[in-house]
Amino acid sequence: MKFIVYILLFASLLPKLSFAGIEPKKDTSRVVGSAYLTRSKAAGITKSQLVDIVDSLLDLEAIDEREIELISYYNSILVSTTANLSLVKYGNVPATNFYDDFDESTVFQITPEDEFPESQIIKIESDSLGVYHHPRIGPVNSRFGWRDGRMHKGIDINLNRGDAVVAAFDGMVRIAHLQGGFGNVVIIRHYNGLETIYAHLSKIKVKPGQVVLSGQLIGLGGSTGHSSGPHLHFEVRFKGQAVNPASIISFTDNKTFNDSIVVKKSRYGICAYPSNASMHTVERGDTWYEVAKRYGLSMKELCVLNNIEKRYYLKPGQKLRVN
Image (cartoon, rainbow, N blue to C red):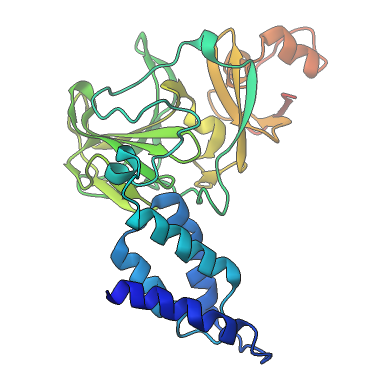
């Protein structure tokens, strides 16, 4: 009953507060409230959270029409008796435009390469999608690529046992359990269509179906599974296909290179890189082959872009044109 009274009271106050002809005072709580409503729209909301929002908005001198519309939208979801069962269980399931279901039993749902478009641009950061947060700041021990005759499909970040590991983007936990060589692993599906993997954890702090925000604690660093010492094995996947995290995230500056990426089919498989990429800064260990592979180019195409006929030894800091 209290909840219904709040909604009715809020609706009745709206005309008086919004159109009283009084210049509203500057109120920083509006910024917080609006941001929370926007993020909640992506992450789902509970009845108690909605009541708290109404309480906070009633303290404002003026209320935007957009805010009452969002309140009404959430109320309609909460009281609906015909809501989709998946919505009841999970809230707003992430990336439904990219995935048919939310499978909590299959570690990787790998989409065949021939089902990918040749190239597509995906927004990965925005006001509605949320922003990136580095899962663990620390030196990189091992890069993406072939290692000891096997494909290493992630980035290894050095840490100590018990160090906090956090979610990279807003999303929902799909996997959170002990899984073979990964040890204790958490897999999060994000609203931007990506999935991130956090492996070798000593402890898992989340459960499948749980909504998490970027920067939220999801586990503690460790060395479970096939691991030679404490580190975080961090992967980025799109529709199950592993892409090089270092192609879209700077592990020096601990942020994404751009707020959107290109996902492209190439002779090397599926690759991803910033949509605004035009030049590549050579890093230690880079080769012509690795740079070409990162951007879905052949080595011949890379040479043509850089007006050379014969490849030479690359030096860290050197710039190569990639688009």
